[in-house]
Amino acid sequence: MRKKFFYLLLLVLFGLTSCVANKSNDKSTAAPSTPPAPKASKTSSVQKVAVVSFAVNNYGTIFGQGSIDPSLIQKSMGDMLTGTEDILKRRWQVKPASSFVGNSSYFDLSTGKLKHGLSSPVIGGRSIPTFTLNRKELVKGTIDPKIAKQLCNVLAVDAVVLYYSEWTLDSGKFVPTIKALTKNCVSMYDSKGKKLFFQRKDVRGTKTIGSAYSGTHINADTIDNWVEASLTGIETIFSKAKI
Image (cartoon, rainbow, N blue to C red; front, side):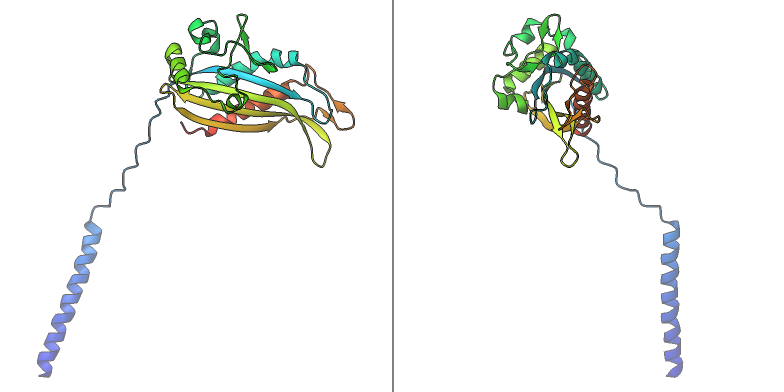
């Protein structure tokens, strides 16, 4: 009886050892598992864009500390537009505004004039227009989807960009210094009239241009503070835009 039990125990132990050995061999010879293929990223249908609206609103004075000379803003508009189109070129093809501002098919879709207080790049004697007389819509970059579709069609682009900014002054909370402040708003519409995005980015200038006690110094040497702050805002907006 004891012998039978002993033989039975040997068979069980031999069987377990064989299973362990087989599993070990299977692991050593099995092909490595293939990781799941990454999901294909969605390719944007936007390949070519155009800046169709570009306006700066002069708010200037804060706590009685100076105002921005409108002529200084106007002289900066060319650099502003060029800088904006250069930023867009990092992601898309750009149809320059200089190639279509004189196009009547484009101009007829706009309001035909700038609202009082706004500055815009002037090309060939004609300002880049806006497409609404409603201030809220101007700030939000809102236009009729049908107009957006027509603009894309007339200009042969996949999307149009609208830019609006308010230029003013900013006073430090603890240190009473004055710096440039820009409130930049950008929107984009595609060829189907869909609003792809709207973003706002407020940016302060990096240099001190005055104080609450000595007044502000707004002139040809300091106006670039607003230009640089505006372009920083535009660049930040487009670097984060998911299109």
